[in-house]
Image (cartoon, rainbow, N blue to C red):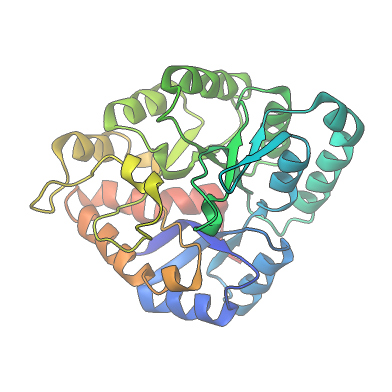
Length: 306
């Protein structure tokens, strides 16, 4: 069964050759690759090295940097905090940001936008990806314009939106954004993460929402990242999918995809394990549902790999 990775990262420090090798070793047939703190062209270079295996995404640096620059900023405890939208900054520079993003997408080489971190808790400078704390309302006009920009070009957008804090308000704001731009195709990174009932409700109410599944069966992530403790367990002690998650995978098989969230060279060394764990879980649902989650949904969202 072909497996696609709908959520992988590149930084300027990760050797491209190592990423290519790890994708082959893990049997990952294609991956949606998003840059972090690196130029968007780096994803295109990986696509050239791995023909037919990469979906390069734009905006992980370009638009996320604009969110940071145009936010209300503070710093405490080794964490940089970015809150909301400074009207003066977006009034002066917003048109340029969207023009640049539009030009990148109009090149026809990027298959989507992401990862856009709207609400992402920071925990400290000990873990690079945790040094920033983001809080941007998903139904703000700037974000609605982002969704419209992607919708007009028929490309999906991957958003990181945590809901373990201010849960009701965050879910309501997310729902308003999805309703406001119904033709946008939004991929919810890590499915929140939220419990199966909440994810079922959001997918049921919004036909333009997809969600990634991050197995977390074996410990291949840094223990220094407390955020992982907020992920609800997919399996019981016996390694079997919990009944409510199995029902969700079957009922919403057309709206789920695998995401490894590899973010560093050491984590790419664990990609094989993460892919094996996902395949073991997929073996517990009917084959038709498994194939949609494993490959079909990602291929439909991102198109033919470059």
